[in-house]
Image 1 (cartoon, each protein chain N blue to C red):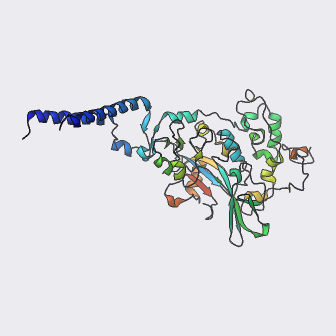
Image 2 (cartoon, chains in turn cyan, green):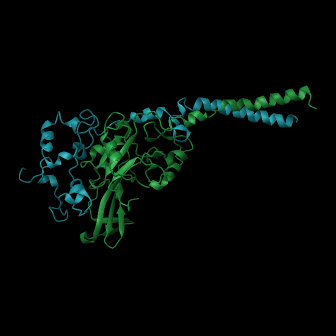
Image 3 (cartoon, rainbow over the protein chains, first blue to last red):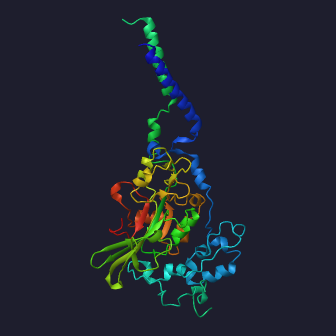
Length: 156
Length: 260
C-alpha cells in the first residue's frame, strides 16, 4: 500500500481524535450510565438536582393558618373545609414578600366547577348540590349572597 | 514471505487505528445489568380513585401554575377526561382544555365546535378519569431518546433534561398515553414529573394537594406501611393499556373498559 492510502487515513484518524477531545470537554462529567442501566438510565446526573430546585408555589393551608387564623377557622367549620385556600386565592409562593397580595378568583365559573349539576351516577359529582347558571341570579357573583367560607345563606 | 520492514509498518498502522478506539467509552456489561432492581428505597407511585373525582379540574389549574406551563396554551401535564355511556351503547368522551376550567356544562365537546347534549335519562354510566404521566417501569419514551435527555431517576420518576433535549419529538410519539408535549416556552419535551421539586421535599404533588375530594394520592410502593402502597398491594386496582408492557405506575380504582 502506498502513500495515497495512508495519507487520507491519517487525516481521518486525526479528525476522529479531534472530535473525541472536543467531546470530552463538551459532555458533562456526570453524564453516563446510571442505576437503571443503559436503556433507561443514560443521563446527566446533575439534572435531578436541577428539577429539585424548582420553586414551590402552592404552599398548602398550613402556610395560611397562622396569620389568617380567623378565615382558616371559619372555613374549617364549613363543608368547604376540604377546599385548599389557594384553589380560590391563588398560589401563595412567598407571600407576603412575593406576591404581597393574592388575586382572589370570585368568578361564577370557579363555583360552577363543582356546583354545575351533572347527574353522573357513578361519579361523586351527582351528590353535590348545583344550580342552573342561566336561571339562578345571572350576572351576579356567587359571593354577593353566599360567603364561600360559610356557604349558608342565613349567615351572611 | 513478509519482511521485517513490512511487519513493522503494519504493526504501526494497527496501533494507530486502535488509538482513537481506546478513547471511546467502552460499555461495561456489568454496568448495564446493574440496578435492574435498584438499591433505591423509594419508588413513587400514584393512585387515582375515579369514584371520588367530580371533574372540578382544580388539579389541572394547580398543576399548570405550579409547573409554569403557559396557562392559556392548550397543553397540560395532567388532565381530566369525561366519559359518558348512553343506554343505546354510544360512548362520548371529552376533555375541553384538559379540564383546566372543570366541566361546567352537560354538553359533550365533540371538537370542531360541535357539542352533543345528552339527556339525564339516556345516561347509563358517566364518570371522570384524571390522567397524568404513568412513570412507567419500562418507559418507551426513554428508550427512543437519541441523546439521553430523558431518563428514569433511581426513584422511578421519568425526567426530561431541558438543557440536553434537542426537541426531536420521538418521545412524544412513543408515549402510548399521550402524556408528553412540547413546552411552548422552552421548546423541549415536557411531561408530568410527579412535582419532583415537591415530593423530594416531603410535600404532596400540587394536584394531590389541590384535590378537595381525595381522588388523587401519591405514595412509595417500596414502603409496606405506606397507605397508598397498601391499597395497591391489597385491593383491586387497574392500570391503563397493560397490553403495551410498559408497566405503568399510576393505579386506578373504578376503571372501566371504555377508558383508554
